[in-house]
Image (cartoon, rainbow, N blue to C red; front, side, top):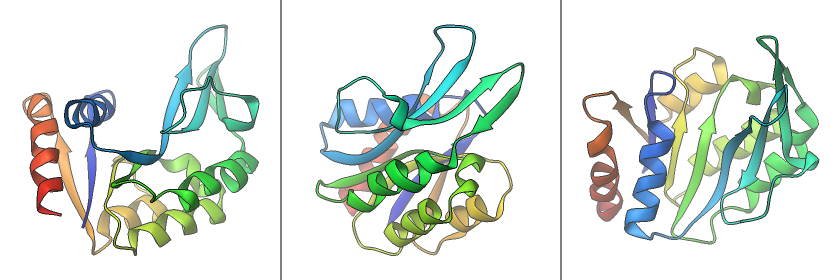
Length: 167
């Protein structure tokens, strides 16, 4: 079974997931997204979870300037797909986070759906936005959704621990 957190933007989904991983020490691989807000343009990077190095241009999946996001599909096709496809060597696979930008890459979406069809537990974050890809993730028969709210976000790490123990 897989667990995905969902909820409003900036409610604390990724923070809860990171706290769960830190508190439990459970070994994970997979990917996370990271914004670089230095400079005049926000850059969004996809990076391997088990890598401490600073993001490189190869990992750049998007740039936001003047409220407009430019997506770089080749980064999802190559690096992103490899991050997902090669994940699974540790106890859980991390996918933080899945959003609408990923719909620019059939290879990446197929890799994600392939992992969801597998037995290795996946824990991640999925945006609430409607899209064919995100709808497939949220309604996948092996996916359990946990809604994160202001009221429950501090309890989410313990809830994830409880769920992972049952896996």
